[in-house]
Length: 212
Image (tube, rainbow, N blue to C red; front, side):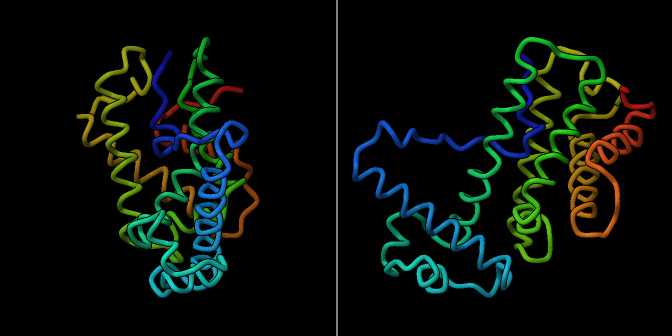
């Protein structure tokens, strides 16, 4: 199976099956979810920098001390929320391309990226936009770039074979192009579909038409 971790932006979070865990574990999981949802909502409303842990626990209707049973600090909480919310994309991509790798596979990877951005616009505004944190944005871009480098060094199929650049340089080019274009698409009024965006990104990077 081809390693497509770079297509999903982040490593997946190991979700638990709520039907097979204890009552105590279910309660902890529910509390964690409430904290994450409260933090995401507040970031979108006020911005990452101004919200406090007290704001988050008040919104979640939980005690202040409860926060530290689940997270180290605000960044840890928001980062955990981001990872959990993109994990499903990684799983979907891996399942879709588990047996057959179509020609021009990069295009389909870009489609998945824009599809995920379309469904999770608020999440992407937190990850990449002005409502989020420069620290978190840099952290996301660094992870994506590292994932691409790893992919290029370990992948044996001719994926991204159009490029003749050192992996570290190519990773920066792709990371910048992908994240900036996705942010522009979700924040700027336009009529482009996700397929059109993926096609234009593919054509710009690979200098050929995307598949029909």
